[in-house]
Length: 399
Image (cartoon, rainbow, N blue to C red; front, side, top):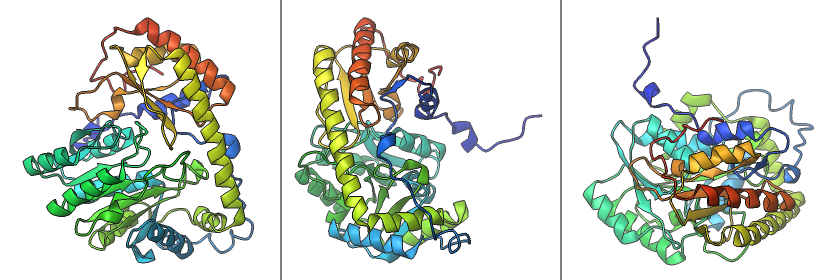
């Protein structure tokens, strides 16, 4: 006899990117799929002297030293934020889940970019959110369009990734950031700002958080240490305006009590050390080189196949294909040749009209692998151009 599950359980879907990452563990696979930091650049955590003091339960809000450090850094970015507004989470992904629990009932409208981070779509779909996409340009979303959509159907919140956006790599201009903040202050709609890539900057770009420009609208700012240290630690954070913070803490308590203490304490020490500045500089140098290597390879193999912008930071190229192409079929063919990438479809809210696109990560593969893998993808996509994308088969690829 099958158990009776919740309506929410019927909305659960597999994460395509997690399925693909299982395949990329095979020896010899060149992966442009996940937002993976380079394995060789990850620091080696030293937990010496920590195990005795931090084996017991800790505060739900997080370790005081790490919360204080986060608050200091956010204040430098322009956010009015004390340590008492910082909650350490199990990766920034948990922050997205907590926001969904706090704001979303079945049918609650939510505005986000189209395209946007696919795991946010997955998380909010589970809670029954009605997702509406706002098209992205090279400068960000259109503030006037944002105002019109809010007037037509007031959302529970607006979710944005304005700095080195995933998947597009877009970085909002300062003018757009200020204008978006103005619209949200006018309307009082909460902003959820996701900012996991801001430290991975390779050339000058506007990076002031939109939250720093807000004066009246409620806000939640999400951050992560996964991209600049090691994802396996699963330590992220959120900061929130005072009206929202208590509810988020209670939801955290109901979820997992607190984030792992050893990882938090080690991170606080590492971020305060001289080692961190050298580590970050090395990481940025390596990633800039790999970005430039991918750009050169794309110019050689994709000049007639796609349009793209060179990202000023982050981890991704976003290629808008010049012809219709079933990118899920292209992924199957690429995996058969030991190359992985992310089709563009899953990054669009279900009822947004997508265009054929692919996302390519440049941080994980070595330069010689980048050239080899891009050559394979250029050949495959050239042969598949003209196929019609399957709009509603978000996770139908067999991996």
